[in-house]
Length: 304
Ligand code: GYE
Image (cartoon, rainbow, N blue to C red; front, top):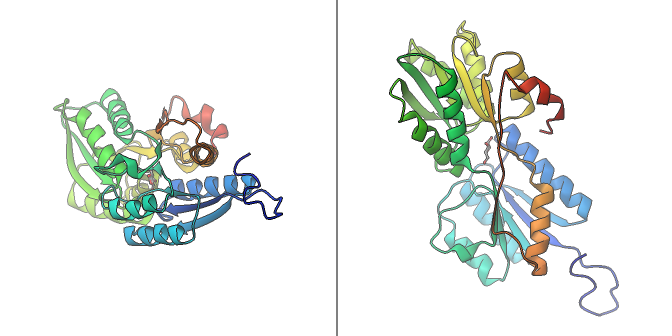
């Protein structure tokens, strides 16, 4: 129990914790599962929860943070759409004495005191895991890869590219022939893949920074009369339920897990921060790899 009955005045009810959440938007199934996890947990704990969707725009998220500060929330949770440009608004929150918990994506800042903690996945490692699976399982002297990138400037797009390239660069038979953004969206993934199939007569592997883009690409590949998972190897990140189903159906070859289910952990951390209890400043999830060898056995227990 936290912040109980302060303020005297005959009010015996516990003060409700007021938390603002500046979410990225609703670009993917991962994102909506994340929003859902946060909203459920807030309701369960009776938190006065102020939710704001940035609809993919940093300026909207900055406006949301300012409004949380004006409303005098106890703590702000931020999933920053891009890595840079946060210092001024985080300074405003700091000046108001409101701690900020970064969830899902990290920021680039010269002042680490602008946020209290981070919880999320190691996106560089996810990129490495995807590439390691590829170099172990895809054979050929001249393997041509197209990379469908996430939102430009976002931590997962930057890091999943970095980790993947780190491994690919050590294997001269693998070559990334295209790398373009489809904004983590399914429809953009489909459109981009459609144009890449017209541009290149030979594509061996699609590496998508998330499942939604991979599922969109699969639609384009099938429309072009090719078999995803066979004619073109598909590798993606997130491991949403639909992607598991696609692995079981043989249309996706490999998925790297990235959990969006931060609700319980995020509110635990928020309470610790506000209660002055010790907490870890950086909590990083451990992600697993799934392919045809283990996806079917795991599918029923998947929660998103
Ligand atoms: O992979 C993608 C979402 O930041 C980890 O954002 C998250 C990414 C996730 O849109 O599906």
